[in-house]
Image 1 (tube, helix red, strand yellow):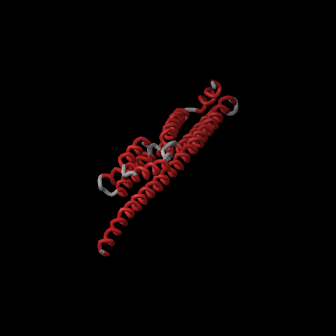
Image 2 (cartoon, rainbow, N blue to C red; image 1 turned 30 degrees about the horizontal axis):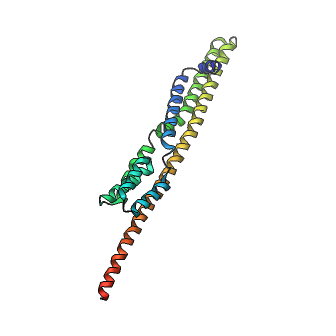
Image 3 (cartoon, rainbow, N blue to C red; image 1 turned 30 degrees about the vertical axis):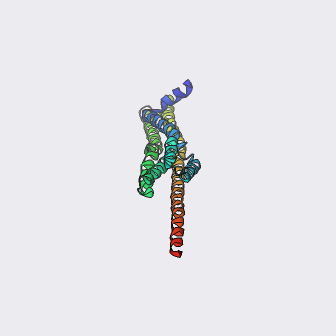
Length: 220
């Protein structure tokens, strides 16, 4: 470990911003992993619970179940159930809540996107600075100081390798986050559609007995 740190310390001044980039990337990736890993789970169970609750005429229990789950899918469904219980349009309520959840799902992803682009550029800057240092030594003393020349070349290579390594790891984390957000969005849309279909079926079932009663009255 000490040998690795000693090698990295020879990468020149750009190693400082590269270290900041690596710390930011690691922090954001860990935070996003913890926030997104369970964001799309439990949707099927929630729909089953909502169907069961509405079957018993107990929408409040379905709402409580959604609140207990507490992830993105559950929050959108909770908004729809709450709106339906209050006599409002559940579809519009779920759309509004979905926009809020989308903003939370994409939080800090711009940091990772920026680091993916910035880290290689900083590494390239370190390469240029290292080569400038090496050629400066050559212009002053020729090749009589090979240690200084190789030090400049080493600085260039270390900075480049570090920038690329940070960008590669960050890109993997960023793509995982983007794909997870896509999965959560698709799961949310699916469960919201299932809930709306459930309400439509329930409303149709309520209208049918009323129509039958009207037909009986007309027949008499």
